[in-house]
Amino acid sequence: MSAEMIQAKPRRIAAVAFVAALAASIALRTSLDRKATKQPAFSPVEYVTSGKTLRQLSFGYQGLLADFYWTRAVQYFGRQKLTGTGDFQELGPLLRITTELDPHLLIAYRFGAIFLAEEPPSGAGQPDAALALIRRGIAANPSYWRLWQDLGFIYYWNLKDYARAASAFEAGSRQPGADVWMKTLAASVAAQGGELETSRQLWSEVFSQASNESIRRSAQEHLAAIKAAEDIGHLDQLLSEFVRREGRPASSVGDLVREGMLPGWPVDPSGVRYELGSGGKAALGAGSKVDLHLAR
Image 1 (cartoon, rainbow, N blue to C red):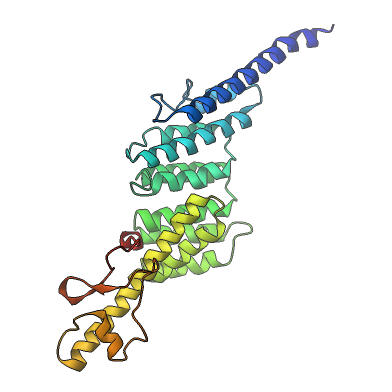
Image 2 (image 1 turned 180 degrees about the vertical axis):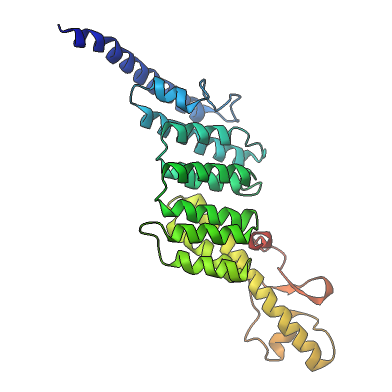
């Protein structure tokens, strides 16, 4: 047996032992999660908290470890959201470890940033942490233009910083393979800021790209809110016109229908009729499933 083979043998044994231990850990944790009826009392950041240290210990299996930690991050996020605790303190560390193990795991940057940036109870409400995650992703994957898109989304939706959002879209438009709409969107955001039509463009892109069902559902909820906000704005215009025409405020949205100003009683995206709210302004009806805050 050569000296090289003798030196390599302990390394192979250690690698096999490491992978076996990892597999056992995954199987045990999956079994416990499946059996648990309540949120288990453990810290999801498993044992070693440095992705760089784990890379050194992984004997070339850092990709497998990254997948494991990404799965843990998704499970943790889903569990915290389901229980409604609003406690997402472990989410950032889990995503940091994941992306330190595999700096090219793009899904962890993209969906992880959404998990961090969304306002509670939909997410962690940590837009600054989401920005840091995306910027690390850009540093590790400088030519992947969709990370610039995600950076622009955070500035636009979560921070309302339209100048930086426009800059991010513009920078992304210069990357190889970037869709042409990125440059158009940069101009729209720079010129119009937080207009509903611009928000619609952004959420439509999220909906069309997302393979994750929860992300698609979130995009649908935002698009429904934008549609409802536009409907209410249009109804308020008609209500003002009714006052000018009739010399009195409308007693209900039905007055607009009876006067021929609407073809029928309008309903919101969840199928509930619009009603009159305080001050004679249009509002969502009782039982509506639309969250208008998502349009802001």
